[in-house]
Image (tube, rainbow, N blue to C red; front, side, top):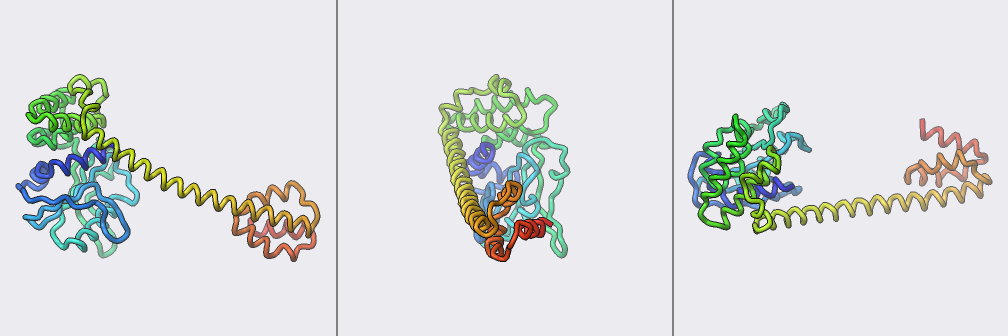
Length: 296
C-alpha cells in the first residue's frame, strides 16, 4: 500500500517526467484522470491523459508479479474500459519494481481465442539509471535501477536529491526515495545518505500515511460487514439447529450424543431440509439413514 501511494503521488506531481521517460515526448497540457473506471468499478494505479496528443498513458506499478485476476487480463480489461470511455490512443506500461526471476515479469500480452492484447513491460532493475537521475520525479525509481554498485547508486540519488533547490520539493522527493529504496536497501544504509527527519517533517509522508490509513479503515469496514454477514448466517444456523433438535426430541425421544454431533456439522440449508422431512421419521435409524444419504 505504501509503495502504491508513493508512486501515485509521484505520477500526479511529476507527470511530465514520466511522459518524457516513457513516451520520449514533451507535454505541457496534462490532465490526471480519476483511477476508478466505469462499469463495475476497478482501480488502476495511474492514468495520465495527454490532451495535446489525444493519448492516454496508463501506468501500472507492480511490486510482485502475482495478481488476481492475472495481470494480462487486467490490462486488457483496463484498455477496453478506457477506450470505451475516451476513444483515443492508449499506451499501457507495466513497471515491475522488485527484482525477481518469475516468468510473469516477461509476459507482455493477453492471449485467448480470437483475442490478443499487447502492452509494454519495464523491469526497473534492468534500466539504465542515467535517464532516471535527470528528473526529480524519477529519482525515487532510480534507486531500483541497474547497477554494479548499489551503494554508489544510492549515493548518486541522494546527491541529486540534495541539489533540488525548492525545499518542499526536496523534502517530498527525499521521502519518496526512502520509501522506494526500502524495496532493495536496508534501512541503515538508506539513513546514511538520506535524512530520516524528512519523513517526520514532510507533508507528503503524512498524506501518504493518511491515505494508507483511510484505505486500511475502508478495508476494515468491508471486512467487518463480511464478518457481520457470516455471524448472522451462523446465528441463523444455530437457531435452526436448536429448533430441529427440539422437534426431533419430541418425535423420537432423546437423541444420542453421536447423532447430536453430526447434527452440529450440518449447514443452514441442510438443517432447513431436515426440518421439512423429520416428521416422516419413526426411529433414530431413520435420522441416521438421512444423515448418511446427505454425506454420501
